[in-house]
Length: 429
Image 1 (tube, helix red, strand yellow):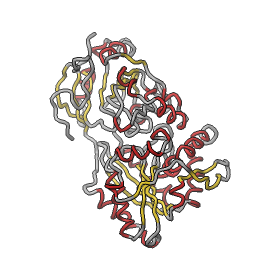
Image 2 (cartoon, rainbow, N blue to C red; image 1 turned 90 degrees about the horizontal axis):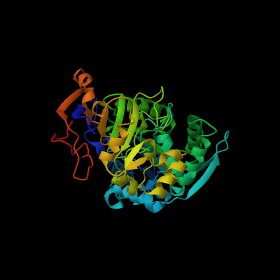
Image 3 (tube, helix red, strand yellow; image 1 turned 90 degrees about the vertical axis):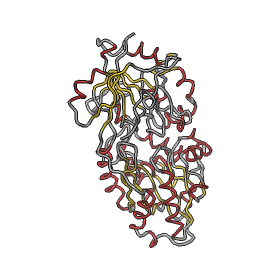
Image 4 (cartoon, rainbow, N blue to C red; image 1 turned 45 degrees about the horizontal axis):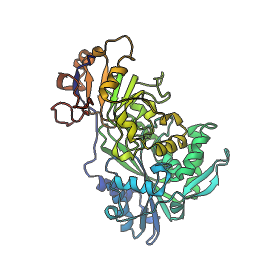
């Protein structure tokens, strides 16, 4: 089969970036005047989640040092719902994979799946679960990245509120909240559960992180508890404006080198690939329209959790063999999205996948198909696009052609080279 030739393209994004992340954490926490609330000797639980947040180990370490300077005793709580196979050991391993270790941060990691039911929401009767170690602390610092959710739309999506619910709710809380979404709106649940957490769980502050389109730390803001909703809503708009995106909206075949929980809750961000509301088709609310998606592999950091692979139509056999079916199943069912764990059509090599996938995108000849090849949905600063986009590409001042059209590159086993290795261009932005 003749394949399309591919052009290496660099995208230009408006991308503010913090020069000194630890110093910004210290400035922001100092601005809140937490010494008026946190006394020497008191304990502070600092949340750390499962997402691959840029500079997260440095951010957590800087928060630890801030509270230690106040004479307090901070410790770190894995706050990631059912991730890590729903075990304390698995969740600790995820943090350590990000460099969040006791040695680096200078704080103890207290991992447990045990929760305390602190109350029930007044209207819905939902039991509010909260990490036992965090509940027993004198204070809780909620640390999380603000960004659009992969399945819900509203003034609050993914950020501090979700960390209080899903993250600190552990497996038990995540399971009950996702079940409740079948009966109540996402926003209604978030507001109701967050109100209980604020009243009962001694949240002293939030540390909100917003990243730019290059997966770099663009903004850090310390938030007082009473301002969580207002500030998270505003920061969500900033996060939307800074989000990475594909260079073109209409795609016959999207090739994704890797998916994983460190990339997105859905393995690949549905805000980027355009399948936020339906697994296998764009809706009127989606900006991007991908006819077919081919996932080539899992990230090392996802530890076999392939949740979200069910959104793709095609994969290869080596990816299937790397999936931890138990971990993936637990996460998908807990999240109320069982089809996210479904396995796509798998073929032996990438060549085999392309031969089949390109026959399912319509009447277009394979060599003329609109194909985009990305590393993952966090890393789209430099991508490969097929020659079918050339005319539009040349009319865009936000896109730079790094390499002229070249044949797709395969190794001796018939597998594509990843975006970062294909061609001779040096990645930069």
